Length: 249
Image 1 (cartoon, rainbow, N blue to C red):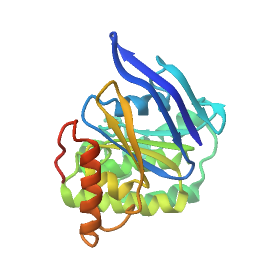
Image 2 (image 1 turned 90 degrees about the vertical axis):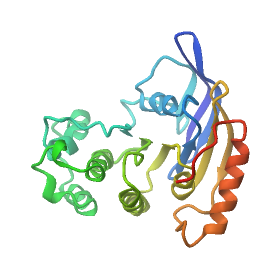
Image 3 (image 1 turned 30 degrees about the vertical axis):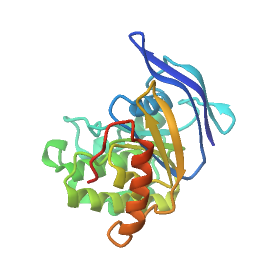
């Protein structure tokens, strides 16, 4: 379990997060939703070890979170690919950085490539790929680490509607096989419902958590469950009624 206690973050004397408390159960996907400036990405950066300038405590299985001890996969909004490296080099980059010359699990590597349909792209460069293909590379790179924690910041926002649906389904299928603890930031209510077993609602008022909703609609087709989705969307909108009104996509 990941436990966040009284997490407070400030930038230039402006409070971004204030006394956030959160328990994240192992092996589940949590989606985080809130308007711009609510501190969603800041939470991920703290958990990823990128932002170390905070007050409060972060624990992983009762031990203070140590990015050297635990393996954390982080997918930023722009995919984080290196333009001058091939797709194969990009996929292996984090693994090689963390584990050095340690032999990679070839069977697992090939399995990830096949599941994400990336075998034919290994010699290409990021500029040769579509947005959906770049996203698959970013997911492959993170999953190859076999992370204890996977952090995803607006991972599908740059994709067109049909590509986004396809990659979302693919992500869920892969997650079901490995059950990595995941925190996924999104601005899309429908996406938060579809991908989150728990939905964390953040307020822009000093970066606080308004609600953590257990979600029975995780992975269920929105088109086949329209009424249930509509009810959950209404519930989330009510929680955000003092926040920015979100467009359902």
